[in-house]
Length: 314
Image (cartoon, rainbow, N blue to C red; front, top):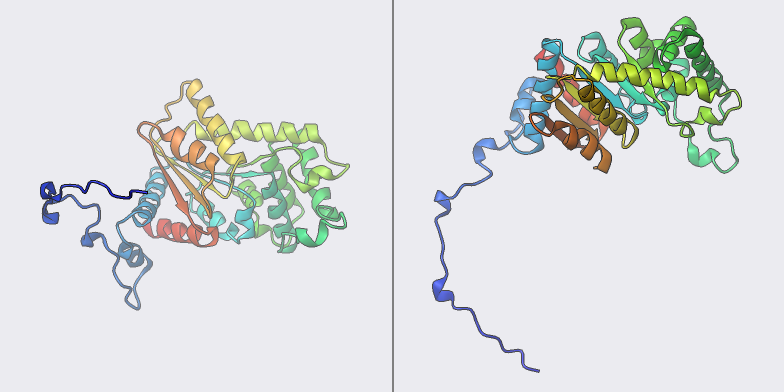
């Protein structure tokens, strides 16, 4: 076997001076070491002006600017956000008139209610799935399924019905409830349910028709807010499918009805990169003048970090 080959003619090899080259990284953009006793604003300034370091500062500025101008800052989430202890921070930004809308999937009201009721939530599925007890908590189902019925009789959305009931029952930890805070502050908290995905759907007192009607009411309320998103910010945190799909439909509906909706910022926060948030939140809706960002990291770190930056900027 002949492994010989014709060697290249290196006499024609060309070089250039790296000093004349355009470089993507400059030492002026490097991070700076922390000095004891500094403020949080100084911490943010010391982050590198590179990739996510730049992005997180842009996101903080976009949120704070939108809040100062009384534009929409919509926070959509999966139930995991409550399970990582983020409710106090979200409620604080509601009280500070930063968040104008909270939207969640069906799991959100389960963890929101249990937190308000007991100060704890999230059962151990691995321990209960084997014997068929997973999702069979009596109080959780009874409360939420009654709230669903209330939503129908009162012709209101699911999020508002849950919030009203938590306040009416004066649950011990109601101050940690997103839905109760929304009801008290008159800020929309919308709930977007996929039938069969939540534990209360297994219970015989679940009224699917009433739930669908209440969730559809919330979709219309959500869409009304999204129609005013121009120069605002939409954040999706921890929802891989439901909220990105709901958001995309609301954007299309608003544009179809003639609302100007082209110049806004979208942000996706999650600990892994998913297809739908990247496509339906970060990329597709912002084609044109908008800007979309994806920050990968743990919610229990990212959300407090961004919230602190916003509070410092107000």
